[in-house]
Length: 471
Image 1 (tube, rainbow, N blue to C red):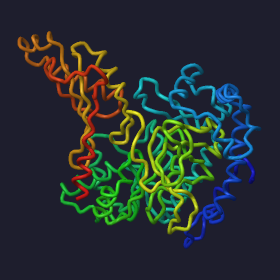
Image 2 (image 1 turned 90 degrees about the vertical axis):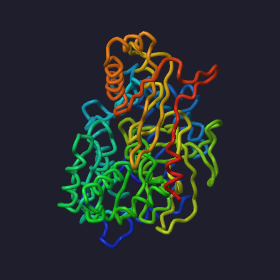
Image 3 (image 1 turned 120 degrees about the vertical axis):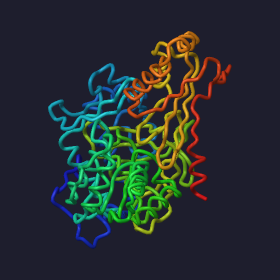
Image 4 (image 1 turned 90 degrees about the horizontal axis):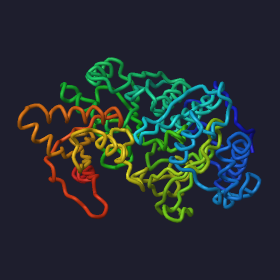
C-alpha cells in the first residue's frame, strides 16, 4: 500500500491530451485495486480506533477491532453507521461528535446540514483533508472533460451546503477559472443570464433543476441558452442528471454534455460518484471512497446487476472519517466495461430513490417529520395535512395542504385576512426549517382523508412529469 494518509503534489497536472489523471490507478486490475483498498481500510480503521471513541465503542460492541479485518469479506462484518447515530453522537458530544479524529485546531472548514429534522449535522474538515478533497475533485473533473483552460460558472448556494464548496476547491486545484456566482437571491437568475452571455463560461455547476430553470428564464428573455457557449454542465444535489429524459433535455437545450455527480455531503469528496465523458452512469472511484451496495433488509452485499443501498467508506480522510456509512439511497451497480477504459464499477442509472421517506426538492433534503413538527407547533393548524411534490415547467414545487381549526374558520368569517395571516406564518416557518419555499394551501377541517393505519401524507407527482417529458 502507498503511504497513508496519502499526500499529493498540488502542482501536478496530466498532459493536456491525457484522458486520465492517474492512468495506473484508474485502469488498475480490480483485484489489485481491492488489495490496495483493503490496506487503506485497515489504516483508516486503525486511525479511527485510536482517535474516535464513537467507532471504538461501536466496534467493541460488535466484537471487532481493526486487526480482525484480514480481507474484504471480514470488512463486511463491520456494522454500518447511520445518519441518526451521527446526529445523536453530536448531540451527546457537541459540536462535532466523538468521531472527530483530528485535533480541534486542525479543523479548516466547518459545513453541515440545514437541520431539516431539527438536529443539524456539523461537518469538520481538516486542513490536510481539504487538500486531498481538492485533489480528488480535480482528478474526477478531469475524467469528465474539464481542463485548466475552462471557466466554470457556479450556480449553487455557498452556505452550509457542502456541494458548491467541494466543487470550487476542485476547480481551483485543477487550475481552471472559477466563477462562483451563487444562487438563491431574488432576481439573481436574471442577473446570471447577463453574466453568462457576457463571460461565456465553458462549464456550469449546480442542480439539474436550476440548470433547466436558467434555460427557461433565458428563453423568456429572448435568449437562446446555446449562446452562452457552455460545453459541460455537471450537477449534484438531486437525481435529475441521471434521468435519461432530463439529461437529454439539458443537453439539447444547451448543446453541451450533462454529467451526473454526487453521493452524500458526509462523504466529501462526494464527487467520487461521477460520470466520465461518456456518461454511461456514475463511476465509483473505489480507491478514494470505497462503495458497497447492500440489500436494504439483510444488509448483505448484492451482486453486480442488482439493486441495493450504497454504503460508503472514506479511504483518505482523517477528520470525521465515515466507515460504512449507510446512505439510504437506492441504486443498481455494474462492473461492465466502460468506453473510457476505467475499471471502476458504475451506477448505470445513477442514484434514483430512497429506502426511507426523505425526499429531495431543489437540492434540499426534506423530511416529512420536519414539516409535521412545524405544523403542529402553530396555533390554528388543524388535524391533517398533505405534502405534494410536483414539477411545474422545469422546477420542483412543494405544496403543503394544511387543515385549519374550526375556530379559525369561524374567526375568518368575522375578520377577513385571518387565513392569509395563518398561511404566511406557516410558509415562513417552513422555509426557516426546511430551507426552501413551500406553497401552503389551507383547507377546511375534515377535508383531507383520514386513515386508521399509516397516513399517506406525501404525494410525489414528479414521475408523471418525467413520463410525459420522455415521450
